[in-house]
Amino acid sequence: MSFIAPRVKLLIIGDEILSGRRQDKHFVKFVEFLARRGMQLSGAEFISDDRDTIAAVLKRTFASGAIVFSCGGIGATPDDRTRQAAAQALGLKLVLHPEAARLIAQRCADNARHGQGSADMSLPENQQRLQMGMFPEGAEIVPNSFNKIPGFFIRNHTFMPGFPEMAWPMMEWTLDTRYANLQHKTTRVEHSFLAFGLPESRITPALEELERRWPGVKAFSLPSVGAPGRSYIDLGVKGEPAAAAQALTYLRDEVVRVGGMLTPPQK
Image (cartoon, rainbow, N blue to C red):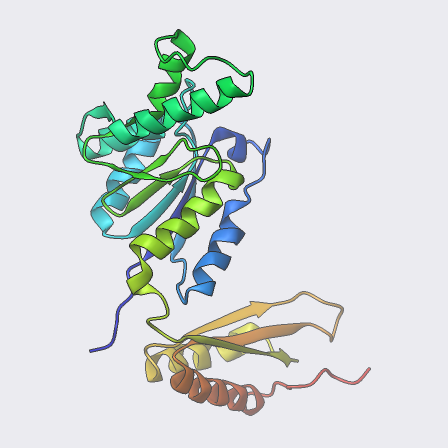
């Protein structure tokens, strides 16, 4: 029986991304982290800070069985609602995680030693910082090598801050600690070539036939809009090496058969 990899999804949470005030940096980096480990991203969503919206998305992803990495919204200010939304989606209480409380207190003590704030955890500002350790009941912590204040993990969902300096090490730690058994389980390749002098509609039947003949292979077609007579289609296949190689040969032959060219037309 062939190995079927679980789907991996990425959630980016924050109004500042949707408004354009900040640009997302997580998507490309996470794809890179997965590729290094022979894994693939199956989808990504960008979500507002609205608690009910986050909860609705999480309710769906918790039910899906996917592996989910979520960036953003786990701080302690009013616009940080991901922790609350996760608890809402699961029907669980938010509770102060004892290890998170210890790490947050340790961070406060570190700051105090550098003349920033106080180590007294009874102070209102430090009590507010402890809110960052309030996770859905039963959650486990995700260590934060940048400033010790952890994220959390529950039911195949990893929740991290929006800051790349914190989130990226947490992504890699989670992939290598929780999902090492999923790495390099399947070998997939991608091949592509340029086809000239060919409308996309003419090669589409071949793409459909390709996926019927080789069910594990995906075909793709990326047309360009160039100068008259110079446009081309970036055609290709993705899948298991042997099947992808066969499908690629078929596709190249089909381009020629239906009147396309594999080299640019002469000026």
